Image 1: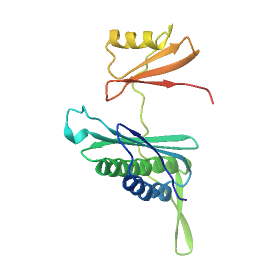
Image 2: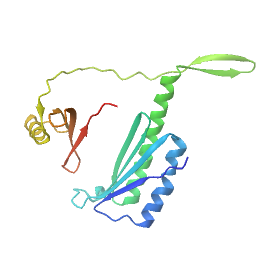
Image 3: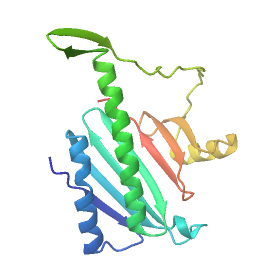
Image 4: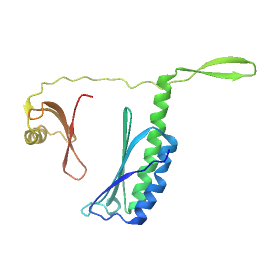
Length: 187
């Protein structure tokens, strides 16, 4: 299945050469994961990056039925950033497919000569939840959530009940110092 990407840019122009390069290379995803519904590529130029090697950012997001995979890489040119994020995505797809197939079949059969032998597949240990935490959600708006996040010293994320939308949201700090908001909805 041919994978076609939707490409978005920030602080840079998308040249025909870059677009051609991305569409040619992104086809690899379809070979490894054929049930992809949506492929989105975000390219950005960050002029104020501390390190010149981090000025170009490539983020790849793929969505399919029941999964979302995302990678982000930075480099000193857009081609390198994209190649690195694509390689990272392919490794992530391998891990994802491995977990999916291990959970579906705990046993496989191998045919040796005329008789079939059942062999158990070694499975990796499943992640263990070692800590649980409960907290009370107080209704607040997005600006109050940002204030609370800063007051509590949470560096990466803050979970809150958005009184305006009547939903649980996750506020997170992005690499560029801005904030992102994940809004939950029941499917």
